[in-house]
Amino acid sequence: MEKPELNVEAKLGTLEWRKSPNAHILLRDASENAPCVSKCHDKPCTTVCPAKVYGWEGAHGKIVVNYENCIECGACRMLCPFDNINCDWPDGGFGVKYKYG
Amino acid sequence: MADDYDAIVVGAGPAGVSAALTMARAGLKVALLERGEYPGAKNVQGAVLYSRMLHELVPDFWKDPEAAIERPVVEQKTCVTTEDSWLTFGYKSLKFLEGVPNCYTIIRVKFDRWYAAKAEAAGAELFCGVTVRDALKENGRIVGIKTSDGDELKASVVVACDGVNSLLAQKAGFIDELKPSEVALGAKEVIALEPGVIEDRFQLNPGEGATMELFGSITLGMLGYAFLYTNKETLSLGVGCKLSDYQRKGLRPADHLELIKKHPYVKKLISGGRTLEYSSHLIPEGGYRSMPPLAADGFLVAGDAAQMSNPAYREGSNLAMTAGRLAGETVVAAKKQGDFSKAALSSYVAALRSSYVLSDMEDVQDLERHVESSPDFLEFYPRLACELAHLRFSADGQPKRRHLKQALALLRRRGLLRVARELFPLRKVAV
Image (cartoon, rainbow over all chains, first blue to last red; front, side, top):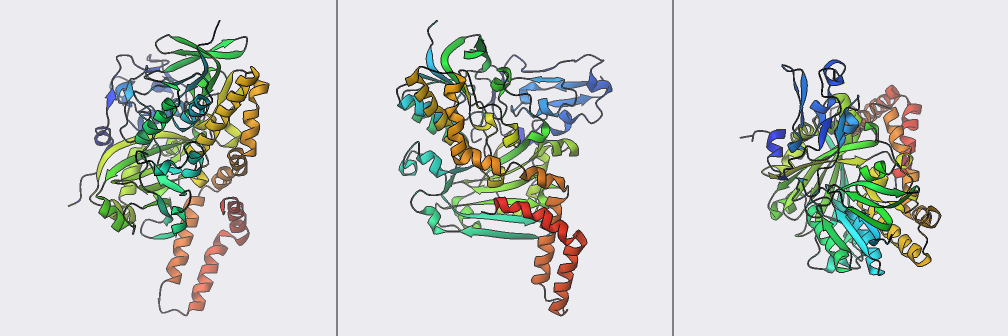
């Protein structure tokens, strides 16, 4: 029997983090006038981020940022068509801890 | 004010450790800063390690029973795919095991810990869990760094080896944010399998290794390739494609990886394996043209931070090691002269230029753009190769002279001149 495929949540389940209390990712404009709300149709952060950090909450009309899932690739900064993602490294010693890499 | 160190190296990956090791051996006071809890914690690579460049830094490293290496590679294969067909060609040679073995598969976290310990043993001070937030500048010269804890550390020179997302080089004002077309996004899984199973499936003697890159339908028209490498007790299966392509497709690399696992060829090779770890990382793809200035007053850049990667040859960590060593040697010479100005440190750039590092980067600089100028390049040619192979290997009742006509028709449909124009630039990566 074929094993069920490993979705991104299951893949993230193989990882460990030292979770920081401080968010290292911030939306520069998180207001209701943010470009994510009105201007950004494709929302590439929500479809490409390899750790599914970004989600679109249609009901509240905003992007939610699960920074604790971040595996620190940095792609989101480059992906955002409106330069609205400020993603720096987590503070020293925090964040993802690869065992194999 | 007196400096705390002769040199601060930011990042304990292949470039940073090579630089720190070189300087510490020459008696310099070196701080090696790593933002992870341990070296390797943030690092991802396929991974194939070319031996010669490490051998120059740690002679005969493969004879060290503690060396964090997996399998010496005796066979390197390429596979071009359509959805239901694939053409593989490989080169296997026992010569790869002689003298300085050509390359080893490695697991980066294990390797980076082992390698960083070499720099420590040589006298470099390794500080883990230290995120560098900014460069300290005085009169336009880099004089140190500032950490996320607010500590300031000063040195005659700062060597930025902080990887593809060199926020340090950005904050120091040497590069702008990279564009999605200047990087690839890679995703990977480490998959556990019994060593005997790995050796059977890849036709290897015990302990020996093989590598494979897969092109064609497997990347769904995106610029990139998938790879499958044999470690001791695991396989590394991964894929890297241009970030701009993932952006255009709205595809998550994790999901792409699942599609790759379903390709009949890959499926068989990884069957029964259990995923131990998923990872993802950016790969510099901007090439020669997106390299930052490599030397400035009190500042050097090496490795991924300087976009030093040559994906056409699957090289990167070796470039980082050579560049790190040359950066280290440059600082050692600068210390003797007591001159850490841009002019003095520019001998680093000259050394890179006379090595394979910048020569290779220069030679392949147009290749990606060339391939991208035919958007279906990586779909058309693998399909053509499989169609031609299908004709060659089929006894379909037709006279073979019709096969030849059909084959020519396939090429004519594309246009013979166009085929020539599209394939000719690949001569640069033929040997």
